[in-house]
Image 1 (cartoon, helix red, strand yellow):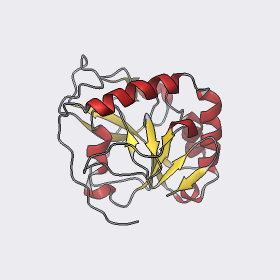
Image 2 (spheres, rainbow, N blue to C red):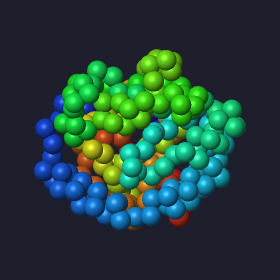
Image 3 (cartoon, rainbow, N blue to C red):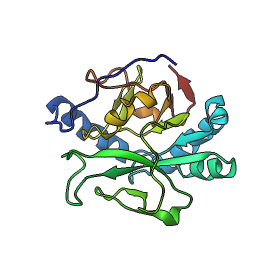
Image 4 (cartoon, rainbow, N blue to C red):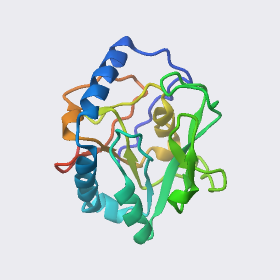
Length: 212
């Protein structure tokens, strides 16, 4: 993996009108997709990939209702004895919207069971306070990234808060293998991106896993 250093994004973002319009269009397109079917196929491709087999620690995410699911990866990872990490949002008030980010950051925590999840600041399930948080100088071997869309260079379009961007800019994450999980219909030729955006190394869809 190249040791590219990415600029840390600002703690607060004002929002790019071009990205905002793109997000609205992609959310509508994503809502029409058969999420369960696509998610199962994409996760099966990940489980067959050497990057999954070689990873000892994997960072996953708990999906929003229309995001690609990760439940199969969680179950299989636990059975295979992998460390499974999930993000937890720190320093964010409960009333904030996902697209109006506060000065908050992601930490990752080990979560042994779905019973240990609770709603976080944006209504997204995350590990409860009893799940041990991991120090910022640790990083997983493989990180499965969510996104509204990805492009063919691996750049992702998130929700505008910059939470993952700040996490991926940490020096400890420089050599983490990043794999975007998405539907093939949500891969665009190109997406607008900023200097601090770190592209994924590969994309997993219902069709296959493609390393870029």
